[in-house]
Length: 399
Ligand code: PMT
Image 1 (spheres, helix red, strand yellow):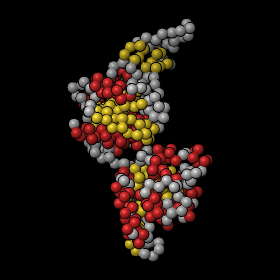
Image 2 (cartoon, rainbow, N blue to C red; image 1 turned 120 degrees about the vertical axis):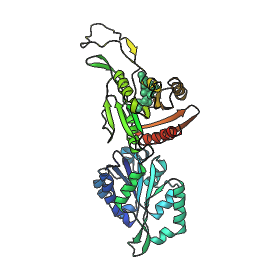
Image 3 (tube, rainbow, N blue to C red; image 1 turned 45 degrees about the vertical axis):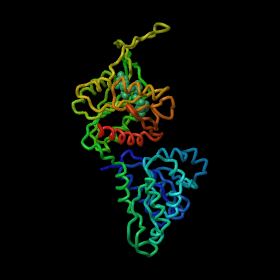
Image 4 (cartoon, rainbow, N blue to C red; image 1 turned 30 degrees about the vertical axis):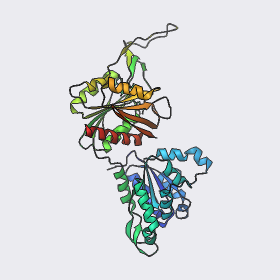
C-alpha cells in the first residue's frame, strides 16, 4: 500500500560512506508514493553527485544556502514549508552536533531550523564515534527536541569495525517514514468533511462563487484517512484528486451540499465544514442565457440554508467543527460564529493575507473553543491538515 501518497519528503544527505544509499532511499520513498526533494551538504557531494540524486528524485538538488539562483527558484524558507517530513539519511556525527546546537551554517541545517515539519535522522558513523559521549549527548538533545531517530543498525562497517552505527536500510527507512504520518487515533470514526466553493447559478452559463480551491478540505480528508477514520468528502467544483479510499460526493450549489450533508448524518461522528458556502443565491435562475439589454442590472438574492447550523441543531448531531474565513477582527468574529452556530470548535482563518487562506498552498489558523484557543503557524495545508486532525481528535475524545 502507498502510505506516503501526497507526502512531500525532503531528504537531507550529509557526508559519510552511506551517502550512496540515499539513491536507493529516494526510490523506496517514491515506491511508497512520496514526492522527494534533496538537499546535500558539501561533504555529501564528495561521496555521491547531485546529478545522480537529481535524476532519481526528478527535482533539482539543493546544495548551497548562498546560491542566489537556487534561492530565487525555491528558497530555503519555501523548502522548509514544502516539506511534510525532513529525513536526514545518512546523518553524520558532525551533522547531529550541528542540529543539536541549532546551527544555521549551511542550507540543510538552516532548513531544519526553519521548518515546522517533523525531522527524522538516520545516523551513520563509525561505532566508536557513535558510542562517544558527545554523540550520545547530542542524541539525547535531539530526542528532547522531538527529532525522530531511525536506527542505527549494528554490524560490520565500511572501516572494518563491527558495532552500532550502520545506517538503517533504505526500505526500512521508508517504512519508518510512513509511520510518521500515522495519526492512528480515529480508528473506526466516521468523518464528513465539506470542501471547496459552491456555485449559485444565475442562468445556464453564469454563476456566483468564490476563490476556494478545496485544498484545505482535501488535506483534512487525507489526514483524517491517515488517522484511521472513514471519510466522506462533500465537495464543490474543484480540480483536485480525491485522496485514496475517501468517499467523494460532488455537488454544485449550497442547496445540493445541504442535502448531501444531511443525508450523511445518520452515519457521521464528526462533521468538519471547511467549504466556502455561498450565503446567498439568485432568487430565480433564468432558463436561457441573459442578454445584455440594459446598462445596469440587478440580481435579487435569497439566503441559502446555513448547513453547519442545521448540522449542529440536528437530532443526530455529530461533533461539529466550523471554519471562519475573516478579513478583520478574526478571533472575535470566529467566536461569534462558534456561539451562534453552536459549534464544538471553530477554526479561524485570516483570509486578508493572500499567502494563506483561499487558493494558497499554505495556511495558518487558530482553533478556538468556548474557553480556549491554540494557534497553528503557517505551514503547508497538508501539514496543517494533520495538526488540525490531531487537535480535533483530542477534543472529540474529551467529549
Ligand atoms: O479551499 P481553499 O482554497 O483551500 O481555502 C480554504 C478556506 C479559506 C476556504 C477554508 O480554510 C475556510 O476558511 N473555509 C470557510 C469559509 C467560509 O465560508 O467561512 P464563513 O465564515 O463564511 O462560514 C462559517 C462556517 O459556516 C464555515 O464552516 C462554512 O462552511 C459554514 N457555512 C457557511 C454558510 C452556509 N450557508 N453554510 C455553512 O455551512
